[in-house]
Image 1 (cartoon, rainbow, N blue to C red):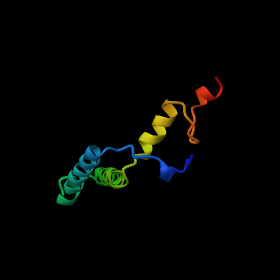
Image 2: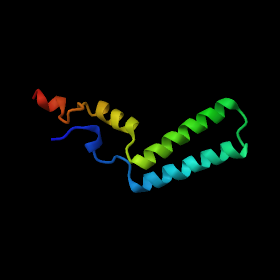
Image 3: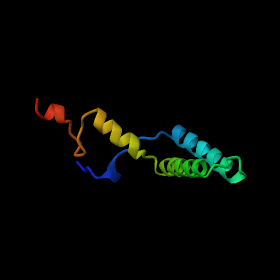
Image 4: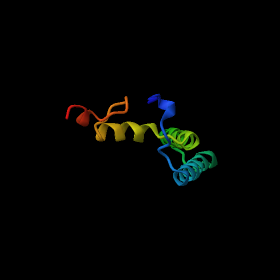
Length: 86
């Protein structure tokens, strides 16, 4: 079993990829058009939109991946710790 990070299947569906791209485009449009004037808001929207675009392009959401692993109590080697000791 190959357990490298690149061998994992996608955890972002095609519909969600499109949705993320549209939301990111809306955020970037608000920043570029000048609708957002606060420097903190500009920085936050820019960072969030970059994250959404990158996860839409690679079809893997690392935050979801890690939280899913932690909440399901599974290790990164691909086996369930709870079942390993049963």
